Image 1 (cartoon, each protein chain N blue to C red):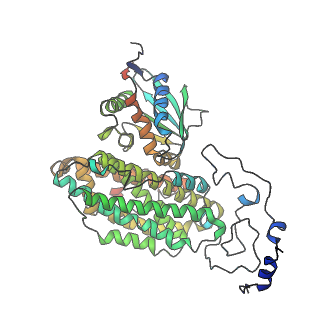
Image 2 (image 1 turned 135 degrees about the vertical axis):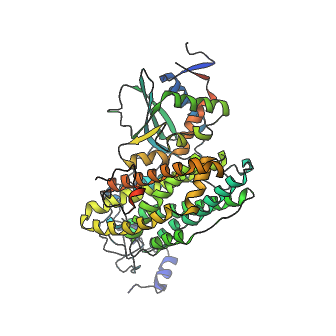
Length: 358
Length: 151
């Protein structure tokens, strides 16, 4: 039992100048060691020296005490449920955190909102519908990590810190697309149940494994491709900047998700089938998304430059985008060590032009 | 035609060297954040292939030189495509002070043509787009350079 009673005797001794100083004498830290500071500043990697850099695979304690500190034996149990390193770790985590912090931006300051041109009605409608979809889906990528953050053992603090940057990134994406929908005389468009079903699948994931595979690898991979397509199809330089800034953030999240899965499977290959099952479910919904007018048609109209032209070239453009999304997703699965080319759960007509041999 | 104070030949090592100097002048304000990426640029013409290494090294960019091949250069990803597409992109940048429409780096590489980004694997390819805005800033810096002329 932790002693939380006030130590009046100590107060009296301290008044007489008789300090305890146990914290100073008995320190077990690597006193005297100094990190080498990187060119970009003092990074997490720089301070991962000696025992401070040792991240235990299975921490014994469930405490918020900083890893490497001299911890009281009677610290309370914080109730963490994610207590094995391979559940959250990735080899690129420390660098991605630094990158995320360094490359933050502001949806208020950094977008030249006053340069938005007046657009033809069909184009404005399309960009507003796309912005509605993105404002809707981006917040789940904040809700999911936020839901799991407090459950993750504090010895994996760098993973928690990275997920915090993701929460901020996604809040900003939600903000910037909401702002875009409302900034130019248009407004929010339709929110579809099928999209919500995909988001619910992520949010209701029974484990961090499941949610991370569905969100970091599948969902954010799709969104990264949509951001790239969005930049390509943008009707003005304002949207181009929005999509470029968002894609940078999203690519970091996908990099974490892919390399986390790789880390996970290298240490426990027996769990591969579980991941396949999560992605089977996710891909089923991905198929529905690819046939949802509110998802596909705005991009087809933007690609063609209007509704009229979309009848001719819009479907072709949507096909290229879909092909790109699926190919990049499968390539990430390959990298993670979870080959899904033979197993991918999409109808044959959606796999035209995609290598399905592992 | 030779490079003069008002014109610079493309593609040449001198062009990319100048582009790096031009980009570094404004990157030093650090607002875009740091970028760490070694990028290969491959420019294909009917008669030749020119390869250059650009090193995004924190808050500055270094020119890694013109190379015969990307072997042993530690580039993480290579952008490749026809000289005409690169030239049109830089002409657009010089005309508009920035890449516009389908001439942005992302737009040109989105579908894999006319330019393609190829990393060793998808994570390396994706890494390029973690720095999309910095790369665009780097390319847009051509607007501060002498007029480019194709060689």
